[in-house]
Length: 426
Image (cartoon, rainbow, N blue to C red; front, top):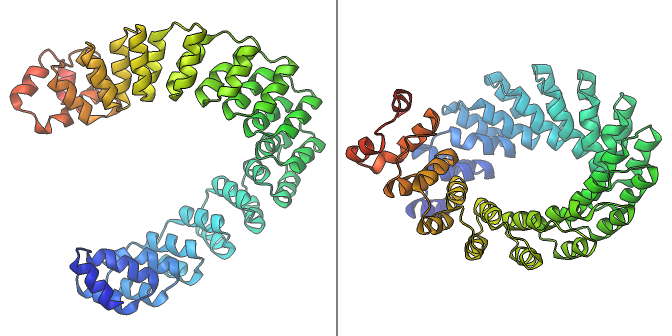
């Protein structure tokens, strides 16, 4: 192994990089060699602690490692209580992160130690412990005062029946678990929530429709759910044709699902909704454009959509050059609006296309500043953009960062007419 390490160093690897690998693997001789070659001891601490190599952890500490929190977190991941305790003795204070890691991986002894040390992030940790099914840790967190409702949502979605019963016994609201169980397709837990008094059938319907859980959708309908349109939107976006059909049969408005289906690229559902009477072709156009669904964009155009400007705007924001070009070919003229959105989200090809069509570089500069796109900022400045209006001091500061490779003369020219506040930001 030493020979391999030396070969790696000869090829450009650094002692720090090799220390990380050796410490995690428990290779004491290579760890010592890398330290002799100048590796920083802290680089190996987390990996050694996570893998439970106490001798290497101790060596690194003796050599000056001081990142005790990272060592604690690594030891918590690996479930090594002795190393966790050593890091605490050295001064580690990341009790909350240690608790979260230990709870996630089911290390009860370390979780209890972190609680004893003062960790207080009970609710966040309860969520992950319930989701992972660690009943004993869930009980400790409840004893500390964690909100049972936080855990119920996670346990219900994950199908953790034992933890669900515990949380209900601790006072959790069955309605909190109904929707999560519906989304996860946990029929047994859904039925338990209903038996315990859950009545939010509409929320259960939405979550079940989004998750594609036909049996639970039907149960919610049988219980009296009436929010067919909201369920239709969720099912259409998720591509759940059978649920879409069921909700249409119940009286859902076809137009309510068209935008979701168009955005999600669900061509079969789009056709079904059109056949059922959906006529908001322009809405379908813009959402299909945003999602980059060229086939559905073309279908909406064939059906009579004419709002090319909206299509261009949404396609530019989504970064879909082909659809932007199609909207331009159809007659869209809102170049500046499209440029602003494309620049903000960093779509350089669309920025160039719209500039070629005559868009104002000032709009591109504004969008790029708001999106933090330094490459497009420099491009707009090179095109003559002059940020004299509409930009905050914070955005002007972002523009200034793009001047690292620009001349003082260019800076003075571009900032002509700016307020004292903007100049102070620069």
